Image (cartoon, rainbow, N blue to C red; front, side, top):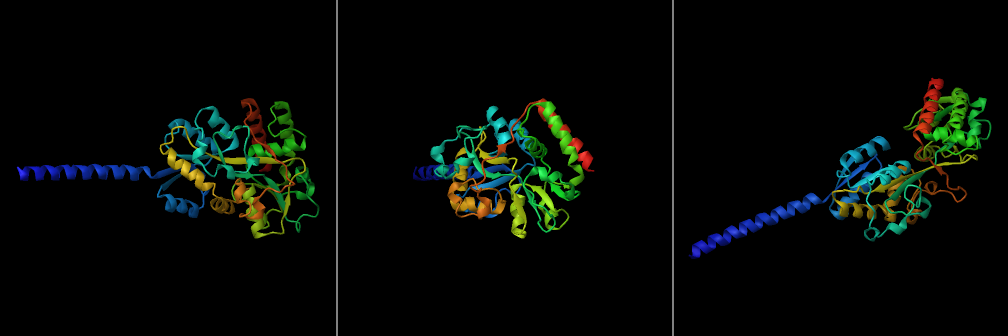
Length: 346
């Protein structure tokens, strides 16, 4: 009898051990966080720091455009990712389609570290869904040794002295937008006839364009291939780091403005881990590492004193106009402008 009891006890102990092991494996499996983002958005030391601090393994998946991200989130109903990044206009579609989870701010102790300048935007007026993570103002940068007049705004880009001297990013809405600003119009103009007028003016700029390139556009300015460039904020930061004598122009006609945001998809598999990541990213020291590496304006107010001063928007710069979604008809007109402009530049 004692042998039988001993055997039963051993069996129960083994079963309990197996169940405990299963429980531990399940817990380990849950210690993951899946990021869906642009390549290189988070420095590796930041990701490694999160894993070391929390024991949560980060799995990173990348996309090339906001539209690709939106399509993927729609296809998966938000079930494949825990944290996703997107630009302002695409976030509006994410929220309208019910693909983002309302944030439980009690789980984000550092939420108040966000700079209010980058909150309460059209895509999230009550700050219910998003955590800003970087902002940008496309700007003009030029080499004063190669340009013999002062550039003050977009209108100066049409100066015949700049023939074949301008390098430009490939954002069709940003470029259409600054042309509209020279006409005293909104970057989000909906009137097709006005957009067509902007298209005609844009084609007049073609002789001055040396190249249209979205990545590393600043290199054309640094290596002397171009003497003027219209660049993303991160590219401006990179160029100034290499050549601080370059001149930055905040165009007098107005500014474009863009804000990247992090959000949790509505069916995120590891929501609690997502909250831990958001809280970690909003720590001042962590945020400073991110923005110093990215070269975008710091959206975490608590980190302003820790980042490169060039990454804090100057007090003299007012908030720019954010590119927003427009009607299909208006967007078609913008795309037509862009196609004809590029053809004229060839």
